[in-house]
Length: 408
Ligand code: UDP
Image 1 (spheres, helix red, strand yellow):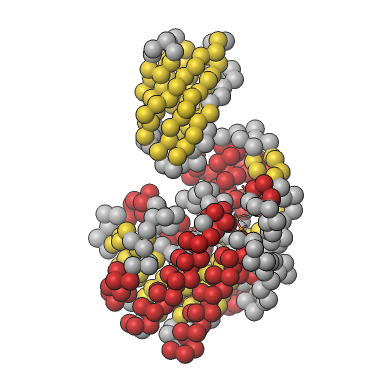
Image 2 (cartoon, protein in one colour):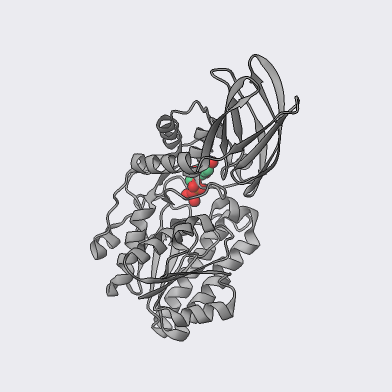
């Protein structure tokens, strides 16, 4: 089978690509790398059955050709993450509505089965527990950009169902509930990679609001199995399914568990929503899925509780993004630890003595304006210059320089 995955270099898309390749299928992944990354698909790039197209789904010609080539379309490409939606509302709305309409139009031209990714966000502020697929959507004012995400994804669902009902296009719609796992980035607001990154850097863990809001997190590996099972199941066509975890947890409790599992000295800090997002921001209080429908049809099951998910994410962040090196500076041995992708801090330490460094990270190229640290009881100033990913050069006031290489 030939599968087209839009957003194939994204967090969920990269796992889905891997799963289909493992099953022996041929995969075409299209991604404009706006939120996805080549790192996510690096192991696949050389694979003869994996084809990567670096383009936007808004490119009609490219989409036409890919849709004609493939047997099934999995449409995951979208603007995601509360922070991104608030910061770039116009682009997000355009991608989510116009992009999906184009995908469905092309799919219909070639009569290809199409899987549409939706979100638990479509339920809006409905805090009923558990939420089933027919439950009400309750949204706040259009003045609040957050609700545009729910509205665009609901429009995607309406569009897909309209294609199914009026043109008999085989579509499947799935609402994901906080899908998480290694590779997810905290850059667009997602809470688990943000908390884990903060904990590993010993920065404050930032809980927005009073922390009593709840979520049910779902392991990405389970979500991927669910997607594949639904696409294989003829009775899934024309239906909407929740995919979600079963362990409801408050964000406060999540912060404590992240702190415990990382052994971090971070303090847990509560930040008002108005400061974290925007004035008048409204959050969902509870979000728990009813997964009876997908369980009955394709025997969906969750294999990871929150602790198991956190263990995987922490291991990933530790080995991949947080690196450290030991080196000599004059007659002093220093340990330097830096966070690359999460990239907001670097710490320099000498034995048990205190250490501090502050830097700025600009996208993936990081440059540190200055760093000050205590070494051998005296304060030394160090400036870090010319760093590219994984390579740091430190130069001190005494003219010495250190080259630091990231551990492979
Ligand atoms: N959140 C938080 N601190 C952060 C990021 C998120 O307390 O640094 C909260 C956020 O306000 C929400 C929950 O964690 O209540 C889940 O946020 P996320 O953006 O991951 O997903 P969503 O809001 O879409 O469920």
